Length: 413
Image (cartoon, rainbow, N blue to C red):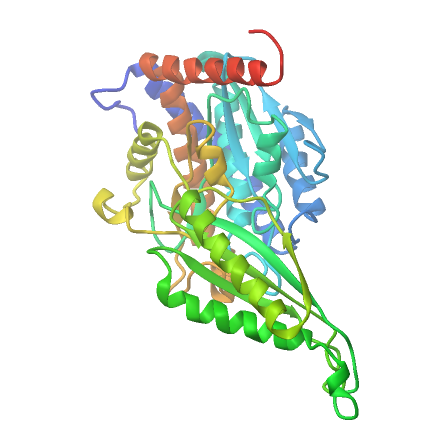
């Protein structure tokens, strides 16, 4: 354990850091058990009842004030400890993917988040903190954090943090804005052999749409992406399909580009209906996820912490080009100072959303990511609480957001 603080770190802050690390060490078995337990029992978005209960149980046993459900979401929760002026939010995700389970490692995210909360709780009084573990459901689809932002869960936070497992160590990753749309076509059923002329083929509408989207790809802007699946394609080959549906992800480097892409994709959806005489409906599947905009200072504090723990993050010049997909944490980073670093697990050639990556998220390497991620987040938040200029910056931002929210809601400051 380190006993001599770096030159720019005071002895009291060093002692608090040691207390944080000791708290994670003390809870190691519980945190690893939480990660492994969530991993072994995957639940899809908005269905994470057992996972959220596991998180809540650990927090309650450790003296946190636990509240659930939150923001009208059955599987959302808040665990709070301390009464300090600086309110730190640690986000915990715990939803899984269909078929491949925890192939995005949200079990690691949840356990690392709980570990960071336990670490900060140990020093909350000395550091003037209120620690808030926020259980955020439905990151994969549904946008739990977007809903919780809208319902005011993040309003009084000075900062927010989470860590996400992946193949590489990235302190300040980039992500894409995303919009999830479902298109539904309605035609007219008929016998495919004896009276096909009476039908209006919804499967043909889907095909025309897919061709239009495919041809559009040549003309997409840099970092625009379109990918989707057919979710309903007809009932039997001898029936002209009357109903079909597909879900598409639209991604772009930023929300303005995403809006331009959406306009073009909607035209492709319409083309399928126009060409076949079908009607169509477009349904918003999830709220729009914004691109990440991590706080620079907090990101650098995390870089320092994770390096001190023996990890080797990518160089700053390299990580700018690492696009990690999309996340509703992007919306949080655009509302308040927040970070979403990637913490590496040993996964061979696997990447997120593969079955092999799911397997890697229940290994000693993943267990170590839980513990290191917890300590690094706690040290980052502790630096924010104990470095005077940064503490005041974050508190002033929280006050400004509260004033703005009060004016927006019709109150007085």
